Length: 156
Image (cartoon, rainbow, N blue to C red; front, side, top):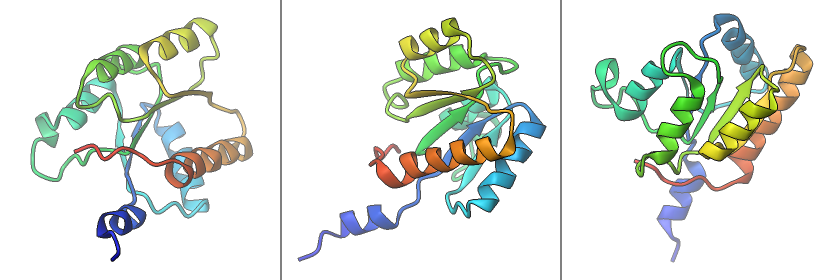
């Protein structure tokens, strides 16, 4: 007898929530995603407050199906409104959201930022590269690891 739950998990493609305020950076991200033929659904929030609405299904995201729970969050640190550091801290203190992996992709290589993010419970910290080829490699590795290699929690 086959366990249908295992089969449905294998066919399930978790979504990605990208929290990025820079349109230019997000457009570069989307171009690379298209080149890599990524099939996961991708949602974008442009600031920390919008991300909180998305994750708590509030405001413009309060309608059923408007904000599916992401499998992974990829976020910038320096965000308008609720800052990325504060957002990480809040998410990792919330019992319902803390199991969602949070990966930081930011321009800051400041050791204090790295330290704070890991203290708050971030799962990974990456520095945005300057060139598109390096970005392509980083995103390929990111998607391969988070969406192909690991088993993500079922968060509803």
